[in-house]
Length: 281
Image (tube, rainbow, N blue to C red):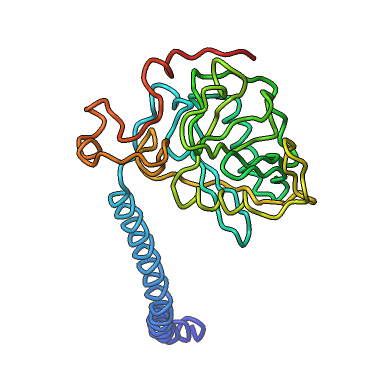
């Protein structure tokens, strides 16, 4: 009887204690639940912001050009090199792959090497300067196909009818009928402008040892020159910056007319005589 009475008195106490325990437990857990919810919201906001940035960047990116259906032809704008003669100046050169494609490949390889191993060693004022176009690791020019090109002022060819690496820059006042097709010599490039031709003239007047009449004028020591790539002036074929005949004039009206006139404001031999190709190997 006493046990039952004690149990009845204890039950209300247990109910009240349980109520307060449950309430305190709920209040203790609430801050943690709210904290986790805040972290989730912040993380999702960061993810949404990152996704929005990616979408904005994709929208701002310009469309990529479609891939060309045919490979780029060998003759292209931007094919050039420069020859650094130190204190005498720099000679800018337009490479002409349509005159000799293998010579073009060799010369661009030498330019890409950006070395100071090329030389100049023969000087004939008013006629030519001659040297070697060389770079370590560049394979020799093994073949020599030639376009039908007569050599003109400021043009560059391989010396002695060879495949290189000895080059010469022709300084004559007009075309050299005995150089280039159909005769000996491969023409593969041209000096780009008159300022560069002035540098060629300076080089040709360097002092050489006393030379008997009729003999080549050779420097006592080969002069090293630097060769590197150069981006030619806009327009192709190159126009109007180098006169192929000294004393000629440039017809500005023809220049303004543009390629549709099928005329060039200078004396270079173009047309069927060039496009015919030919030559040996």
